[in-house]
Amino acid sequence: MPALAHLSNLEFTLLVALGSLLAGLLGALTGLGGGVVIVPLLTIAFGVDIRYAIGASLVSVIATSSGAAAAYLREGYSNIRVGMFLELATTIGAISGAYLAPHVPTSAIAIIFGVVLLYSAYTANKQLHETQAIEPDRFAKRLRLDGSYPSENGPKSYNVQNVPAGFGLMYVAGTISGLLGIGSGAVKVLAMDQAMHIPFKVSTTTSNFMIGVTAAASAGIYFHKGYIDPGLAMPVMLGVLAGALIGARILPDAKVKSLRLIFSLVIVALAIEMILKGAKGHL
Amino acid sequence: MSSQPHGLTEKRFETLIGQLLRVGVTLSAVIVFGGGVYYLFQHQGPAQNFHVFRGEPENLRYFSGIFDFAVALHSRGFIQLGLLVLLATPVARVAFSVIGFASERDWLYVAITLGVLALLVYGLAFS
Image 1 (cartoon, chains in turn green, blue):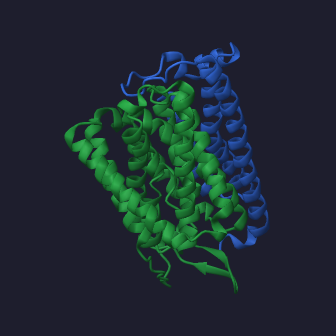
Image 2 (spheres, chains in turn cyan, brown):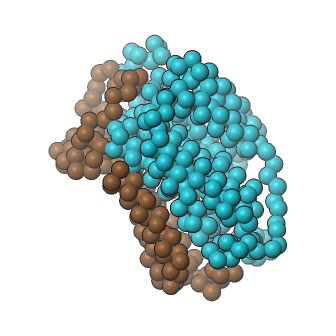
Image 3 (tube, chains in turn purple, orange):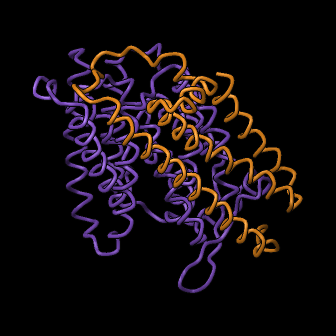
């Protein structure tokens, strides 16, 4: 970006912090997470190398996930056993993804990123159905995954289904997270909501709970590979965190549905831009 | 279901884990913010070039180097130290869960959680 080449360090840092704040705000309001827009924002608008962008994004993902998980745990929706068991799959995936990253050309990473963005935008606007199967699953029983969550009529219990399929999908979610530096909440919710038939609110909060652990597994590897630059990660992490905190505060009054639609359109535009730039080898 | 008999202690434990996460994130943000203000004082002039990937110098990649930098009041080392606190927060959460499951005598989940902890420690320390 030629226009940004003449910025002073202070101007650059403040602009990145402001962009990250908006990303964190929208990410919290729509439930998509700030990470999905940080990488396109840094690479497309600021001309940052995608590897630095991924490193900074991962750090911000850990911050927002851990911050939000603290609030969700208090409400009692997260299923700690489901989360911990599936974290086995996501951390193995995250480590695979982080090891894979240096061997995948950056143009290919940009294209994969674009495809995952499109998928995230699609699931965010799709009506997820609440299916409740009655028969217990063999693995779920042995692993004691079934649980209950608070509802208007007292605790409501649920059975967990298709544990092996969910575990496999979680490995994929972890690999995507490690490769692209995002929380990949969309794939995690797909695994829990669609495959394992876990109630939506439990899926989303447990997914959030897992994202921090998944991201920490690959962030360590990125750290050692020199992908995490303090000058870039600092404004990104603080900006996204501030945006997410503001978002959580104004969430009850926000028009979530129209916001989600607008945010999804932005994501689709960014996804197409990433795919095109990746295909032309500009990233 | 299975979690019902332990309902109360488990609830307390979840609150404790929530507090641990909040403290870790806050501490990290404070260190990163302090380091960041100092960094902007130390590094005035044109913005750093992130367009070309070079990778961080060795001493900003490993704990010992970062610690030396931070102690020597080097702003970039200070920020990295704050980021390491952030990375350590989920690890501490998992370690804490090991104790939680052990206190419930849920050995299957002690083993599962230890597995997750081993993977995290591998990613952070031995990769």
